Image (spheres, helix red, strand yellow):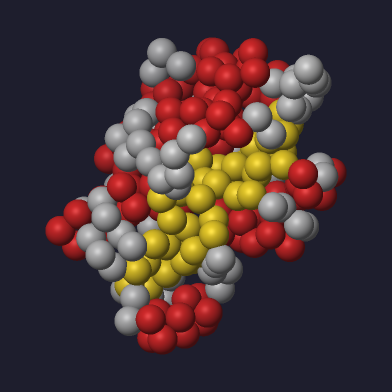
Length: 245
């Protein structure tokens, strides 16, 4: 029996090179959108609505009496009350509420995947690494690991997460993809201390967020399984996958 394929798209600008129509697409935006999505859902949010513009975020928030949140260039977007830090969404704040979220890179990539015909979309980050890996192995379908990057430019942390996934599940997939091989190699070099690796390389997003005093966010977003649930996109919403075999 042939194994499903796995590919890694290192930037939204490269997504068009992959046929997403028969694949599970994993949206990866480690710093910080997909880490925050996992955390909010883990802490009891009813669901998260990812949108690609601030006006749409504000509009939906008003209609649904939801929390409107998001960032542009690493800071709270003008017109929104909350940002893109996982620490803004503890259980006592977010439980039983709706979060409408817009971010510079992650929510944009999710909508690109939708527009390109992706039938199945999940979000991945180190805080839900194990849940992502378990789901992909269980589903036995083709996979595209989609890195949100930074304004279409390659970034280290999303590629590290892709590499972490590949290192765990590669025996279940046919991987003939140079970007996947590179991602796994990068992760192998970094895995003993992801934070120090990012610091040593002066990674662009590390540099950007550290400049805003967000070291705590970076450390959390690089730590496995702190919010180990699976956000899956259904009918315009990210919800927690709870289906049983």
